[in-house]
Amino acid sequence: MKYGRFRIATQTVVFLLMFAIPLLNVYELYFITGTYYALNVGGLGVADPVVILQAMFASGQLTLPLLSAAVFPIFVALIMGRVWCGWLCPYLFISDRVESLRQFIRRKVFKVDHPVANREVQNSFRANFIRFSFLITGTAFGGMLGIPVLNYISAPGILSTEAMIFVKERSFSIEILFVLGIVGLQLTLLPRFWCRMFCPTGTLLSLIRSPQTLRVDSLSKHPTTPCCKEISCSDVCPMGLQPYRESRDLLCANCGQCIDACKHDRLRFYSMGSA
Ligand code: SF4
Ligand code: SF4
Figure 1 (cartoon, rainbow, N blue to C red):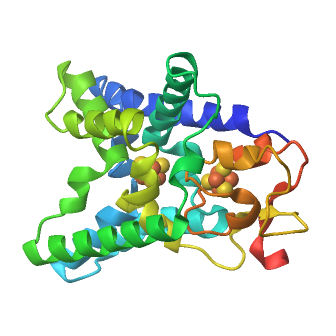
Figure 2 (cartoon, rainbow, N blue to C red; figure 1 turned 180 degrees about the vertical axis):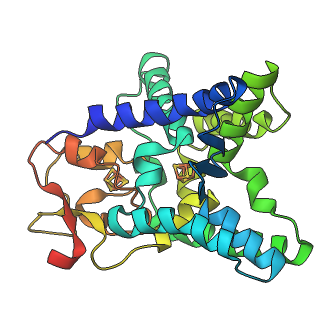
């Protein structure tokens, strides 16, 4: 089964929803309100786990509203893994387009045949070390100051807030420059760096898993060497993994792109509990 079309469809819906929610509110329809920092859907609160974590550290307590806003994202992550990143996040939707543009420029302008960024930046241990250090430092710093500093660098949260400002005021705030900055860096010097090495939301979601959580399984007989010469799975991985041997890495966002790319059907979605 190919997942690409479903993935783009869900990403597109979530991207458009950023604009649809404030538009509904403008017309005084309030069934759904908020941004991707925190939503209220028919009275049910759903929040980015990083927002909840910071609120907990800043206030020193875990209140009932905070706890209930965490239930849905934790439940989904426990069953499906980091699907927020792989299938829904509006920033990854943009990042995918930016990476396609980067590769197009490399092919057409610089005549570089090699399709992808990932073979240039692979080092999942270093990426995990950087992003977990960043999350811990940001949370501790924010807790000490009593300010949710990580919210100011949440790409999906910023995008969603900017969409709301645009719909309501036909303008953008200065925070849009942060997203434009990381997009510019991804296009030029640091392909795919934000989701791989910094995003606090993606990092925290990586930790919410159980032995039963959905993951990508490799059917390769030689797990440390590539199954084929093309290594097309590594070429498409947005997290810079080598899926034939690293699909269990905490970086994996269960996007399914490696499964679609493998010409030999050696990758598939699998639950860890049945491995
Ligand atoms: S790592 Fe962050 S920006 Fe990237 S897809 Fe996940 S939530 Fe979105
Ligand atoms: S290993 Fe596969 S499923 Fe995981 S992030 Fe990479 S391409 Fe997506």
